[in-house]
Length: 44
Length: 356
Image (cartoon, rainbow over all chains, first blue to last red; front, side, top):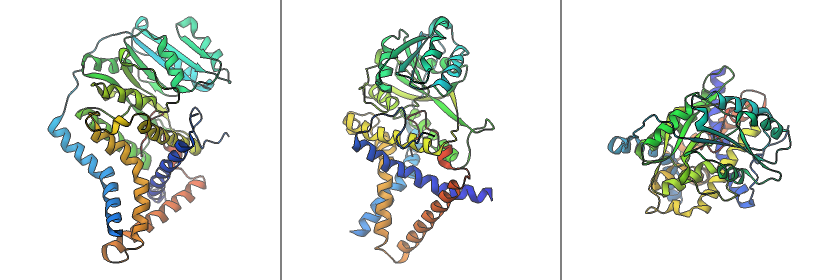
């Protein structure tokens, strides 16, 4: 079961991190500069 | 036309993840430039910018006192950017032990906080660190030994991400991170790494130029200015820092986004990085940094173009792509059900460190 999870997390990681490129472009275009708290971070 | 889009996209993705590492492998064999390291004890100013670091400030400063380096040659500076959680009170407790504090009552951002910290630095070498990571005892010694080589202007150490057992993170994220560090090591052997780890890097103080206040990736801008100035920005895995893997997926994703936002800003602020005759590591910059920014768009173009090519080899590729995204969706479902998430494990290469 653990092996299966690891296999599934590889494409998920790849897609997630590539989506961060798009998000990064969005924040750059919006002029976001305050990164002490990263964009998209929810306070919990 | 559709075929051209398909093959261009596929070639770009293949080059970024496989072609470029192979190129580095060959390049390093043909043109390796060793660093002439020699142990020495120049004065060092350790600059740490902090905002709200109540949890990390004390362990970080205690770690500074554990370093194997003469105390009279190690200046520790904490530049506080309007903390609201009592970090300033914690840091003040260390004033008697020689820690110098620079305080801004209003938010000025990390880059401006670093500028203020560097303004009071007196060491020949500036060492930058973040609040969260811990150094090995020998880290400072290992880093500064590289400055015996006059061609070196900046040195980045290696950041290890540790799991709850204290072992280096494995699985998908761990594998990716090892791949990334391997790339950096090869780039360093050839000339320079296009960036450093914000958690652990040092430069010659005389090469420091104040950052623009809105700068996001100080750990890329500072080393790249040094490279453009004619010196090397190397990676030394003998200098080590450690960080705990975060348990917060949103935080990790946010950090990654920060790094990539910073990459867009980097090219906007320093367009000369994309001029081959200005940037001595133009190939590395384009392949490593710019290439990573292009990959998601290439992935989209590959998929869409593939929808119009439904025969032979193209059909096989389309099926593989669909399968890949279905598996990614399944991975996402697993992660949202509380199973180990890659985002949870994905730590930045310092703050500016992980590239996809």
